[in-house]
Image (cartoon, rainbow over all chains, first blue to last red; front, side, top):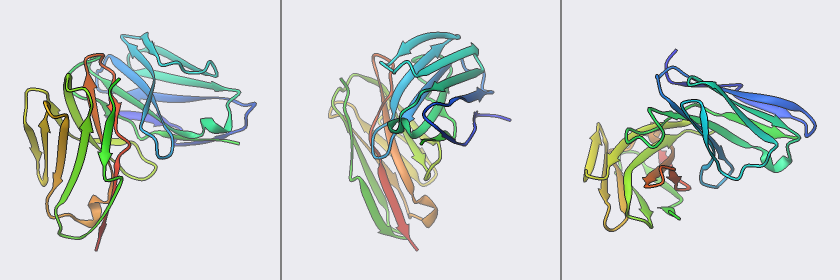
Length: 114
Length: 111
C-alpha cells in the first residue's frame, strides 16, 4: 500500500478511556506530522517528527502523547480527553522537515469524545 | 505570525461554470504554496504545489497562480463538474517551515 494510512478511521471514546491513533507512510519520507482539524477552523499543527526525533510540540496538552518508533510510523496516544478534543486528526509526511516538495496527508481519524 | 485567508468561505455554481478561489497571506516570505482538496470527513489531497520562484502551475482543468509580492494565490477550475464539489484549502510554507492553512472554500457544483 502506498501513501499515508491512518487507523482507525473513526473512534468514539469516553473521557476516561485510553486509545491510540496510528499513522503509517510508505513514501520513504523522514518527517511526519500530526494536525488537528476542528469544525470551521484552519488545520492546527500539533507535533512534528524529523528522523524519529520530535522537533515541534505546538503547545499541545499532555493528554495527547505522540510516539514515533521509526520514520514510517507515528502514533498519537490519547488519555483523559475532553469533549472539545473531538475533531478530525490528520497525519502528514514530507521528504524532510521543511522540504520544498509538499506534504502528503492521510485520510484522518474522526475522533468523538463522549 | 502568518495569517492565511480564503474568500469566499462557500461558493455554489452551476455545472460548466469556471471556478475562481482566492487565497491571501500576510507574510510574503514563503517558500511555497500548496492547494489541497478535502472531501467531507476525509483527508487532504494535494492538487498543486507552487514554489516561490514560480508564477503558476497547471494540472488538467486546474490552474493556480501565485503573486508572492502581493500575498495572493488564485486557484482556477475550468468547466466545473459536480465531482468538483469539495472544500479547497490553501497552505503556505513560510521560513519557519510550519505550514499555515486557510479555513477553506467549500464549493458546490449544481448539476
